[in-house]
Image 1: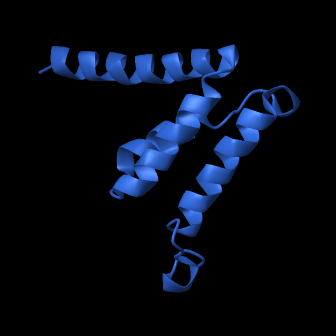
Image 2: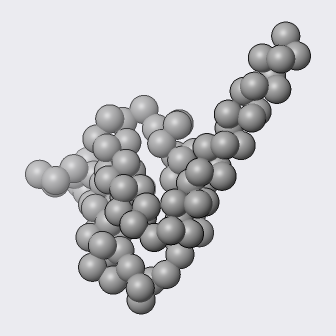
Length: 93
């Protein structure tokens, strides 16, 4: 696995480096890249990730992605679905 002890650097794991590179690239070239279809997946990773450093990198990437209006709309929709699910679950208890 690439995220083993060999891949740890002073900047963290390979996953952290990948998220950092994605944020830097998207910040530099948002128009060329366009919409990011994985906002919902990033939110799921954020929710399930036990590693604080990795969660921090996910949040930084989400912050950069929100500069695009369609990505921001997708984030709002994903979060709204979660809150609606919680509300329906609580209402049925």
